[in-house]
Length: 248
Image 1 (cartoon, rainbow, N blue to C red):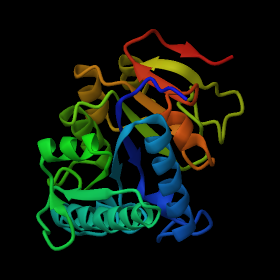
Image 2: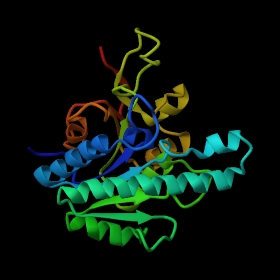
Image 3: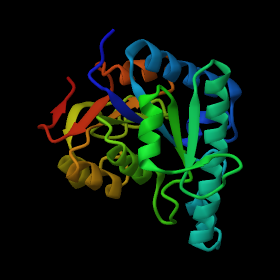
Image 4: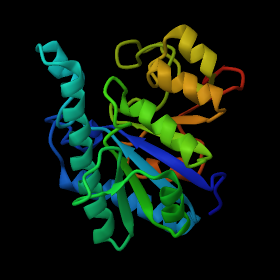
């Protein structure tokens, strides 16, 4: 099976790792399924795959701030949560013989490599999956922005954003509350910003627009969708500079 991509960055929220009925913690079965799909696609399609993980299943900086915590300190706690998820994904990948490296933006040499773009690209060229953790290493930035930055830095062909809410792309309205909402097949960066569509934060969208980095938004909770997205299949919504087109 051929793919339209050579190198991609896959963005996964921390909640994607959690048991759906609880919404927090790590479900080993879900992590193993994600790891299997990533490994299969990398091997069968000859892809170079990097992953950015969130930490919302363990801690969210904004939640801490809302309870009176210092925002920067709360964000650093969130960065540490992403490292826990990254190590869980690394373990699941290596358990199925997929070589993996975790790189973090905060130095913690006992458990992961420091983030070095050229080293990350070398790992990818050697067939290793690289998991980026600890965000950008700076507070006040989301892991969406991290994913956009890392995708540009390692010269990825696309940024794939897997959602965990069951919504299979970008819609004109929330399809969970509005049955008339229609899914976009394609939507421009500018329309995402102007219409306030829930894709990624505005900093990440603007960065992708400036760097002409396409974004594919898809439902990663459905088994098989990660592989389809990595293969460049017809799935979800593509955000790029093309004219906006709604699905019928």
